Length: 267
Image (cartoon, rainbow, N blue to C red):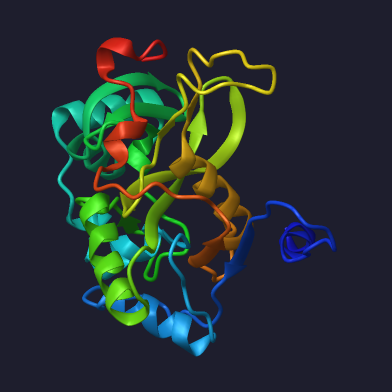
């Protein structure tokens, strides 16, 4: 992982389009009740990084959830009968399964070791994206997704605009698995300030052919790239500054990245 991050900071001596990603160092451990927009602005200032128009500040959902108090002690959770039934099937803790049910709208698959659900935010996720890694506290601590990641991104954006000027995009990201592919990848779960999906239908390729179905999930592409820098374990880089991506200003949310249930072929 260190080698990958080092490569991302190398700028070849040629002209042409480029994207740079910088992990913001020195971000303090975020705790419930912290003012996350202030944390982000202060961390950028301490690092001597000044976001510009068309830059994207990527913030992991983990620190958003911590700041917003989405931390649950599993010992306080009373499992329902349904949770106990699914816990027996999946071989998971009944208290964890109960939280998964509260955070989801539908159970898609329950087999030993796997509980796949449709999250209340609309995406498919194992364990409703509940996280237990890099969370302060005991083994009984679980971290839920932010209540409204788009609103969380908007709050951070307002602070960035006030501190550095307009035109800065913000992404809140998480890591999710994908059908038929191994491993997790960075995805956008909250966005503010730019279009997370770029519809290129009607544009033309190098040979003049009209594009009929090309839609670019720009939010997810940025999130996946930023995950190479922020990492998954002990890196301690939950904020990444991305520069060089052409943004289209917009006020939409990450629901634009989701297929409606009636068009989800994998549900």
